[in-house]
Image: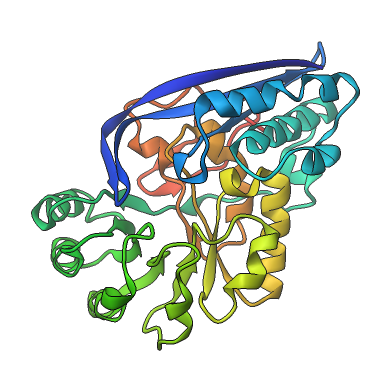
Amino acid sequence: MDLSVQIERWPLATAFTISRGSKTEAVVVTVDLSDGTHRGRGECVPYSRYHESPEGVVAAIEAMRPALARGLDRTALQSEMPPGAARNALDCAFWDLEAKRGGRRAYELAGLAEPKPLVTAYTISLGTPEAMAEAAARAADRPLLKVKLGSGDDRERIAAVRRAAPQAELIVDANEGWTEDILVQNLAACAQAGVTLIEQPLPEGRDDALARIKRPIPVCADESVHDRASLAALGGKYDAINVKLDKAGGLTEALALAAEAEKRGFALMVGCMVATSLAMAPAMLVAQRSSVVDLDGPLLLAKDRPDGLRYVGSRAYPSESRLWG
């Protein structure tokens, strides 16, 4: 098995800002696996929040060369590498390679129905209430907006966004930016604005307050959930989970995580890091069973890779095999 790994940088159309900072490019790591006849590809986004770097992820993938030479497959990969971005890229490359080898689509290999187009959220970056209102007004015709919050003026921000986009469904992502003392007030402001879901208002590991209050709108775990091992700690605090392949460590675990979460009574959201369509394509398979889809990464780029997903407004179409799977 031939392995190729590289770091790629994709400029964004505009700066992307959340509670932890701002960026102007998406830095991704791509993997190519080839058996000499067929090639499989995968993409991941190293995330410093989880102590990852592009160079560290490349090193972790390169360290798998001996195992690949010994015949490592996708099943064995799950125990050879921990969940995270590095395993995600390799896992998705394995899925793509298996599909190409067998002349079948990845959804068939997973025992799933043919995927359908889905409406994705469109992200409004964190900024001043005025700047966020301007961004929301430009996107007001989109059916679902994801509003980044996470600092002192959040009640003004969500009110301003609602005034600018009165017809759009709003979901909120605080990216761990709230504290317990402002939790109830901010949840109330979101409820007043008609927000239908809020992601990760409190930091991972310091979110017990969610179990002690009446939640006026459903709360979704993001940073607090990675793989199936994370689920046991979420009961009573969260109503939904955000499945991201970079956290779960690939499509294989993401599908298993989604199934187990449903058994435990959690609603499903599928999310992404800011990345190209190569990262979105496998996530579209998990998205088919999710009530909220947030796969707008390519829409935030100045330019997507060739053969990327087709977006018509906010409707994302499943990938063609020449891209992935």
